[in-house]
Image 1 (cartoon, rainbow, N blue to C red):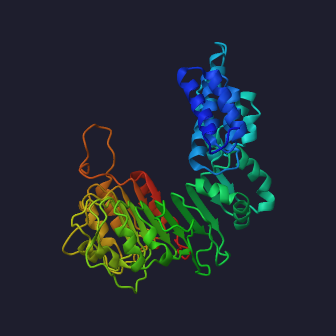
Image 2: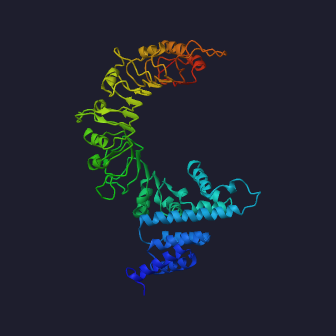
Image 3: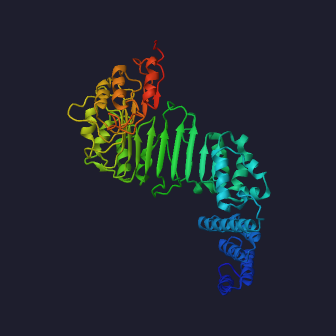
Length: 498
């Protein structure tokens, strides 16, 4: 009798391996088949049996063996990954063998490689809302491709109550081999139903999670997972303001999380900030984060590329030295301008802030003379800069919503400041139409039919001008502006009367 832990099991496995190395594949397969019968929880016998059948070109049987191994009761992440790779290899080999036997008059799409055809179907199902059933009804070959490619079924959308979507979700989970990687939940009831039935087995495979609920969420709501990216949006950002824990498996190791986006929901950072490391994106909108939690996250994430936060404006910074974020490209701060004083951002290219005074921003930025390409300032009461100018590298500039009139800056741009500027946003300001006309005349002179450059060619032409909500701007000027600027955006103010 061969026992699981005794030498008999090892002897049978070694004999099968020896047959395999000697090229006696049929005998090796028989030994692995015997191992599967005696020890059905061991993934290695399924894996090697499937690989041998693949070499013997018995593709259908290789697929069946790999699938049987995936359906075994034990949980072994490494074994599942290896068996999925063996299953994919067998599927591709079977498809390629059938494709090679097609007649010369076969259509082009029928000659596409198996993985490319599967990717096309994935794009059609997920990005163009083509029902998977429509594809499966075209022919038996396409039906088999849709059924056999787990990658097609990796994204899962939970958009209604569990009662309404349970049948569809169960079919989806079966086709994905319970390896959903992208979970998009728009219904809390649908998410709860899915988690109760599949969460313990499928949560560890999740790479991307997106929640978009209303504000009516249980106070102790959480889901155990460890994704790479996590997006949580609440449709009503002015909800109850509860703090939610971001709970995982209970281990103290850092999260895998690289991208965290929150909109209208406050995470309980007190319990997790020391486990957020090596983030590449942190975006918090409609809620606040405290410096005592933010700074340790940034110190542990020097390669962060995007930072969008709203700070508690009454809180004083605690960093004694500037935190170096050498890969930060985009920075947006809703409140708490003191944060900029605590950062060193040599690679910064896009900056949006709500500083009350424009000149103070460039005194606080480090290093000096950053080659910014995009700059936005909101709600500023003073936009004067008597001792310095805006970066000459700017291609996009926004004064949207500023309380101070931007007329002086518009005239400075017309005179040649920011020579690379192509996008200007002065929406919801009191900018005067006269200075806008001077700007367009200077930066966008009439185009000529000759090859010689015009007098304003040393400056980049304005390509986009946003004038929405400018109460002093009259629609009778629009035709002239649109003959000079490619895109002019304008919507009237409700109380405006021309």
